[in-house]
Image (cartoon, rainbow, N blue to C red; front, side, top):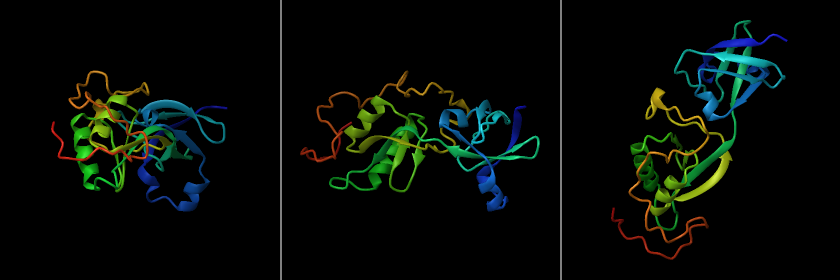
Length: 194
């Protein structure tokens, strides 16, 4: 079977009839692959496909790729290991997520922003920093759709490892409490000294 080349992307499959989108074979890709403009993979029909998009292209879940033969291929964002960050209902508020996003953004970390949680790629240093801010951090397997912008085309991380290399975090020392439980710790929440 000849490899089909897909060189066009329709974000969110906009303007394409739902029945056509639903009938298209799928290609399931993690975030590291979806931010590459050129790669090979196998679709849900077992067909090997080549994706050759303009440099700097990022493919999102539910995007539709268009093949040189006119065929469509629907992108599915694969579940992958991520850290899911929520605020502590007992000691904090949703505003804590804004503060956490600010600190992560200062470190140019890809972040998925949702109304009630954040997601980042696994990183034990950032996990410790977030827990020191009294956030609840769980390791889960879910799709990852970070915001565009903060890292842009400069994000070259493709190894699947964390982003702690080369970063200095001022919050990583003196963590003598463990937040891996359901956050029922007894320490009080005074204003944090940095």
